Amino acid sequence: MSTAMTPDPAAAEQVRADDRDHVFHSWSAQAHVDSLPVAGGSGSYFWDYDGNRYLDFASQLVNLNLGHGHPKLVAAIQEQAARLATIAPAMGSDVRGEAARLIAERSPGDLDRVFFTNGGAEANEHAIRMARLQTGRPVVLSAYRSYHGASGGAIALTGDPRRWENESTGQAVAHFFGPYPYRSAFHADSPEQESERALQHLRDVVQLQGPQTIAAIIQESVVGTNGILVPPPGYVQGVRELCDEYGILLIADEVMAGFGRCGEWFAIDHWGVTPDLITFAKGINSGYVPLGGVIMGPRTTERFAERSYPGGLTYSGHPLACAAAVASIHAFEDENILERTRKLGETVVEPRLQELKDKHASVGDVRGLGMFWAIELVKNKETREPLVPFNASGAAAAPMGAFAAACKQSGLWPFVNMNRTHVVPPLTISEDELSTGLDIIDAALDVADEHT
Ligand code: PLP
Image 1 (spheres, rainbow, N blue to C red):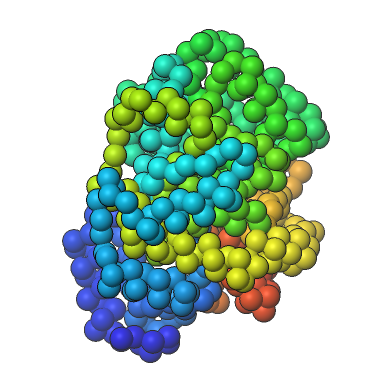
Image 2 (cartoon, rainbow, N blue to C red):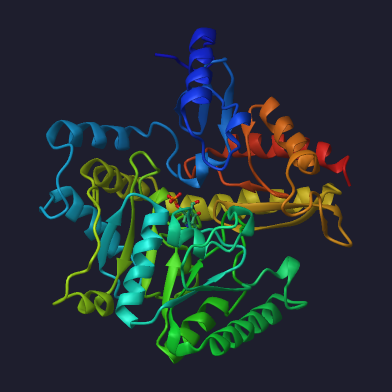
């Protein structure tokens, strides 16, 4: 077994060769894959077989909320594996039921029942199927600058054309612009105006589309991958009211923003709004075993009280995943994770990012909440021209590549997307580790400044 900082060149070469020659990689041209040969991880760090150790400022794919190797999660998975590793969804399982109850007890309003999936895309697939069946309407509205997953229905919802390639998804989906005060589609000059205009735009889209055709509006409660866009005041409440006016269901995609990332169980708790359906995954058990799901209330379950829900998954509510979820929810409470996430966000991350904005020519905007922050890089602060063009790849994206390389050389694994870096470390990160990471980002921004 490899331990931190022990180079093992033979193992490194074997991992690289198998990965390159036999693994088909997500979101990649297969000929150019050169993955890091990862050996292990502990807490906020992971390390590779070459002997490099990285502070995980990306929490892998923003799922590792309790860090690597959390002893309570590891023990729960081991115990469950020894007792009962798998059980069909139609059978009662103590650990599945307990996970569902703990999730329901922490969900907003009257949401009290969970359909388990294996991840976020599947959760969104089932949420839109449920919404279409419940309302008898075909269309789902989703926002541009959203990410909802990469399976057929979820990729159609995803409002990010970089993710599509001349595909026909056969899905009845229409897109709208959500609020983004720094790059307002509505030429608003305050967050309040952005909120008002975004709501008017959404109302226009609903009316043009025909409200009687719309099953649901799905949105990330705080947009994640596409920029950490925190909704301005009144927006979430306004969407809820619009949905109620037209009998449209509101689906909150909490796959990335939920389970503590924003300092609450669900990001939407910040606005006191109860959606009709919540989708979750990632942070529910820090991704130790794949798990996601749809949380619903009586209005949805009534629809399926006498008529079967025509959907299911062999691994729905897998015991190992549910055991990790139960342990994770207990660990959140034992370790005061929600409170410390809010506190570290407010007292460490936010002031430090504001400093970086003042200091660096390349930092145009910083925004976020909890442990969910973005630094948006620009060529010019006045014009807000992005440091790399949106949709850039190859040489055009070079400044962000140079920024990422500088971070990695200093032992930090960054989350980089388009002209942004996101500060999304494990919620268990210590204050010292957090400051170390922010120092590394500060130094790497000098590299970005050279391109302004
Ligand atoms: N929804 C959101 C908001 C996400 O961020 C993601 C993944 O990043 C997904 C859905 C898809 O989740 P998964 O990759 O588990 O299918």
